[in-house]
Length: 309
Ligand code: RIB
Ligand code: CA
Image (cartoon, rainbow, N blue to C red; front, side, top):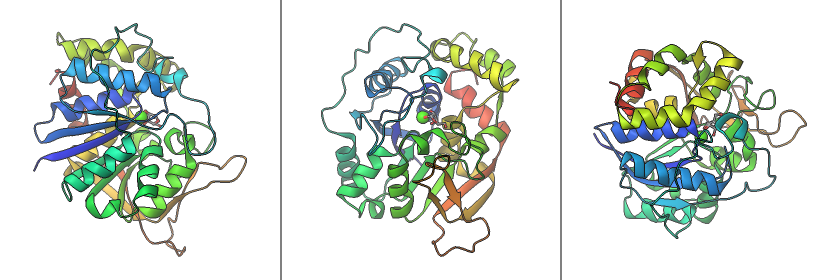
């Protein structure tokens, strides 16, 4: 089966690895990249997506999306990914050009042109998808699979206490998506923490004599050094784990089906994913939450992404 992917993304170092994983996978075709602000501003995330398509020879249109979230404008994650989102590596500007169509409109058009055939993969804040859903609430009828990287299902976030970056960057967008998309798959930050990649192994993979390994070593070096100082021997690549789930869902070892939403208010809780673990609420089950994935296969998919397999 070929996975035909629309990838919504805020590249971002881990976004880049996820996109390279999809590009390298024989059972996958990247149909479009839709770009949002998030890790860094839209100017950088768009340029990074175009540069990545150029370096990896990805033949897919790149659509610019939302430059800001729906309501508040929070801090970005430049401290993780570098000011330019790609490790401040000083890459030359991309030669590829973005499409003129807005990402949200491209989502609606492509879903109408290919009903029942596309998987939407969300690797950043959900602003573009929320805009698309607001323009056409029937969108989920034409998109059989939605996979979201986001949230922290037991309150262990990576920004303010219980909040994960993607849902925290645009909580209103996340609320719209989680309330209006009947069923989706969620790969959260806590699953990412359980599936760390040993820095020593990553160093070996990204040192192989392959242009993609060299490129990825360059853009990821800064964030891997930062990560080692903060979290020790393992590097945590959230979007890469989400892409593994997209590409080979049969390798998931354990999942949980629960009702999930996003808190919008609260000094500490705004942007927090709230999961009805005990099934006591009235909300319908909407999320299949990844709890455990085949780590060996995850690492093989990462290696293949950079030509180190
Ligand atoms: O919390 C991790 C997520 O936030 C990843 O998608 C990362 O790229 C950032 O967007
Ligand atoms: Ca991302």
